Length: 405
Image (cartoon, rainbow, N blue to C red; front, side, top):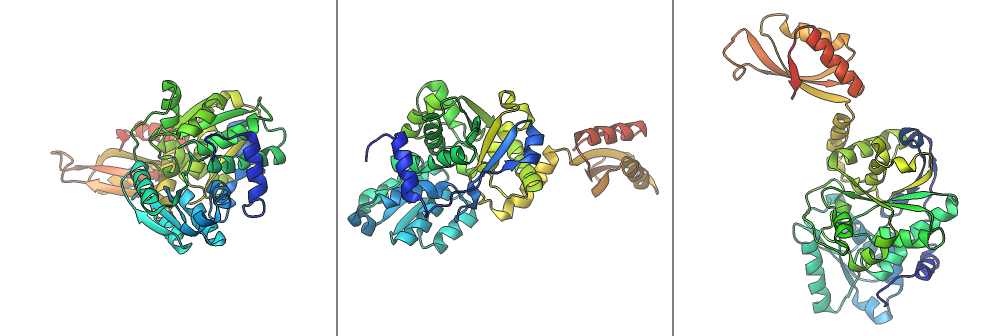
């Protein structure tokens, strides 16, 4: 196995995994195009059997094992999707799979890996903790360690996504690629730039783990601290050495998004595309919202919606945070008369402004010495930021002093 990847490796991977991994659709999205001012195409790799693009690299790597290695099995560290890809294709190929997952890995991914027959070990608070244990297991048990983003076989497999986009949208002008360890970025950038060097490649990472951008600034891979993030698939503290070496000269721009951006992007995809994505996949849309990439205006842009394995136990929280970020849910504090009619006067102003009250919380005990007034916190449903501003002005006009709560 050589420590590099060539365009020929990507084409060979495409032939190798054909019929085993879905050639996912890449349709044009009218609502997203209108939203961001570019002609948006969505590469729907969340439609893979395990809900993620990671099947591509996992399948390509497994198919290249020799018979003895197949019998012993493989091991990998993964926050979830690489583990799912290995577990699924390992079961189909009869190859034992051990995956080490950090404790923050979404429960849905842990449960699915076990259901697919993989041996799952939960270890550490970060991906790096899991990766260290995977290396120890590989050395102890003689297993082939398949790195999730820094293995040439995996990088070549991920690059097949780019080859499919070129087939389905031959005049595409830009790709927006979610970036954690940079394996997908390296594979896709190599695949598209080798035949269409004018295509722009935009890497998007989360502010909770900005390892690719930091590595670009340093000129080599560096380790950055990571924080919990909705984009758990991008929560990598250090990009891969090989993936960085391949991707760095091919990337045109890096965009960093925060948690509010991710929540809002999940919400937009739910509402406009009727598509459930995980945070890492939503980062592609987050990168082009809010005018972050003005150079892409009017261009044909493919968003790599690379995974749909969001933990349903947090989806409602994500939607709530997305509504807040969109100005469609607002909470404010105010002081009102604690006599009959006080709350009615407040809610009348809210109703007249066209907002809907979700919750009112009184605070009599800690609202000051005036026993004839009380502090309240009110949560309302609104139509957006302009509606919030109009409601705030209406309340002020009626003598209510309000502040965001």
